Image (tube, rainbow, N blue to C red; front, top):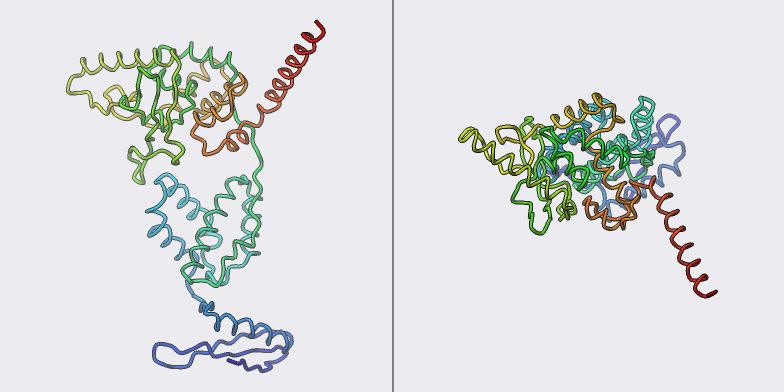
Length: 379
């Protein structure tokens, strides 16, 4: 297979046969704009090598907006969690399509994508949010390459946005203790107890059923989470990841609180009779139905403002649980297991603000141990 070259104006162009179409007609590939004949020969040789090694993919005219929407609908929607799908499709419609959707897949370059990330950073979006855009583009163009729609995945040549570490929000032991005292007569008290004493996520708490709790062995089995589907309807889903399915040991205080909650629900069932819709939920509305996720946020914000607590989100109660355990000297591996982290490194990265205190405690313990040994030897 050979290429042919000719000069057009001040630049060189090559042409090479790339096979035949479905009618048997010869197909040729033209490419111009080369400053010298040598540059055209080199590019032509690379194309011929791809064709001979059956690596050549004929350029597609499909645009990014068309491919990414079809990819998300036909592939990703079937493989990722509904909440993840909604988050990603919103990012695609709000950011990726308006800025990059008009490009043909084959004409996307690393520079175009890098400029897109830089512009989003200038608009004030965080590194972690831009990294989500990057992850979506990466898997989309990787799939386009695997499906032989494009010659290569250009995102492999783009630098992933840097994520600035943010210190997690937490309360102190005294603040957590005062908070529990303040909310002990509120209807969502048990939700706060579970968040602070088990580190469960909001959706996991709202999806917790009595069949998941063994009050005798003092354990909770985290199996599901409450989410909103594409239509905004509350529904149960599997936990966030495989590692999120876990057993959490309970303290006597939590067991006692759960027993009181069960007694309250039994009274409600007797009082309402058939009006009570039993979903077997620990945290529910007054008629037994699932509680809207926003209700927890609103109740927490009300208590914070009324009693002048440091402002935090509900998820920060999970952070408070982990931080207090680490400060009390608990093994990070145990904390990771309670939180459902897939690895201990995630726990230590998230709660790195605790590390200096842990190191000081370790240093003090070693100092005490060695001094104790020296004291015994001197005696």
